[in-house]
Image (cartoon, rainbow over all chains, first blue to last red; front, side):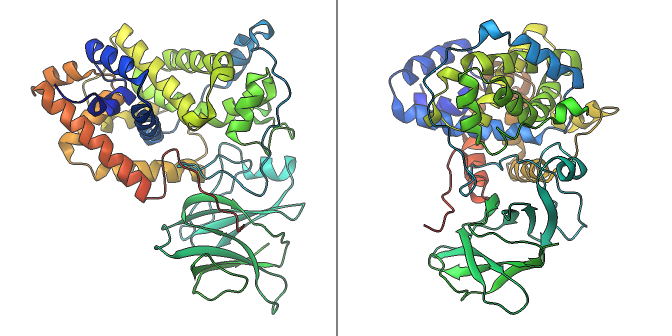
Length: 225
Length: 205
């Protein structure tokens, strides 16, 4: 018989036959290592969901779902725990975090980085988004009225010993100011420094963990509109 | 989409998925609604693909999200991403339904695209498009026999013994292909920057 851990991926796919399912479920109840494996493979399985042709859920379904969660079914109220509020340190899970506004198609050369099913028009009218700027062909920068800027980027993972570093350049000739580092991949990244219209956002590839002044090559840049 | 769908509560906009789920666990309907708005499209797309019926797919998504509401307090944050949890739940319910309804299909997924004709595509937003590209590229890199077992298991709801029968393969071959394919996918998604369940600290500190 195969090792139980070889059945974990199939378990994540919900493809096990009943006998194997029982064996794996029993094993998972006491094996932390296999639970970790399962979590990873469930992440892979969930990723497969994104390969499906995109469809919008029926509009009325939202109302049905909200009606189905009757107030009496509300889970118990726990003491008010601090809920993580992240503006500066967005999560970088394996898949992109759906964010709050949409970016329109910005041309074939621009990676169409945008957000979920909200239109730009909607965002611009309802939120504090002030603009969407392409940064090279690898990122879009969404600017907020409060000066915050979030990059939505698709970059190869930086080589070992390197990081990408974002920079804000106020005006035309001023010194680039460090605005955070990241490793690459598909990501959303909120700059650690505010920027506004007319400022330039650039991304460089830096040795080590980056630094206060750019040393590496510029990967992309764009002026906020 | 209606205005209702687009309602955004400023109180929840900045929250992480984990934060939204924590609020949902406390009975916060706005936080729950936001999770729904973020993941209902991909959940519905997945459900349609599996059950091949839009009404049944809507039922699946409703079941899954009601479960999210009811089970949110039991969600263990160390278990992984809420999005994975939501989509896993959706997938399980869809597979259970397709098995109950015996609606499963034998064709692999290339025919799936036809299912969406006439359906309003959701805005092809970048994150969704990028995620789709990355996953599809990873799938394309699998050897055909490996991709086949993944597609038939995940999207058509076949169990391993059913796959063995359908594909005229020894059950051991189905198992080894499934294991190899999923292990390869995990590696490919990780290399592409889509790192399952791991978070990056991108702060400069």
